[in-house]
Image (tube, rainbow, N blue to C red; front, side):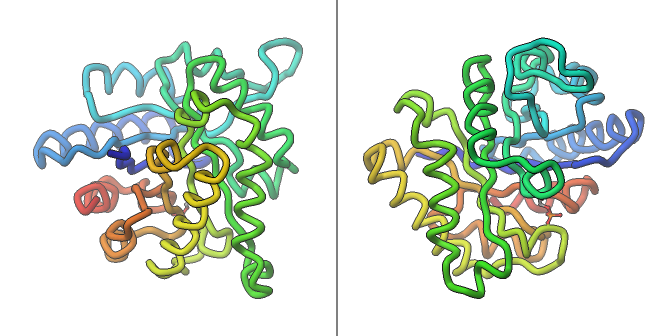
Length: 253
Ligand code: PGA
């Protein structure tokens, strides 16, 4: 059985106090509502990692993630944070290749491959983001573009390594725009990605990899998207900043 995951990507939001209040609301509601088996992952800014790690200690289904890591092990990279440093806070995951990093920081698949290797060799599971822009979708080349992103960043991994990766399909045109891919569009891409993974790594491994959908997931559209066979959860931006919305999304996985 593949792991179901609902990950909240806070992006560059929340002061330390605001972030800790949000986490304490989530913990409280999770206890009250005794949520399902899904893993909840909080992808917080670096400054929150240590404090959130303490708050979620002993909470089996709640895990911590960073939103980025550097592609080198350590050294003179002022302002950067390494995978080893992130792992030392107690985080389990790190987002790699979010479309905002690709667009605003020029990150390409070769660099993302180096980040993924850093994450894996330091005991972190990468949440690798891929997805097409509207232009690409309109030309009908979205599936070849996104499967290409996956080949470039993930196909040099070993069978052991790939099984530690989570993939997040996030159509760029759906991120923060209020436009969600339809459940059918999400399923089509997720199934294509799984097939692509199966060709390289075999069916058993492909069937074990969680593929999340991201892009304007809200409480009112989550259940339709999560109901699709190859959608194993979501990467939630805006709606993860409000505890009630986030918990409602977790409740329907
Ligand atoms: P959104 O962001 O839910 O606000 O569209 C998703 C993401 O960027 O991970």
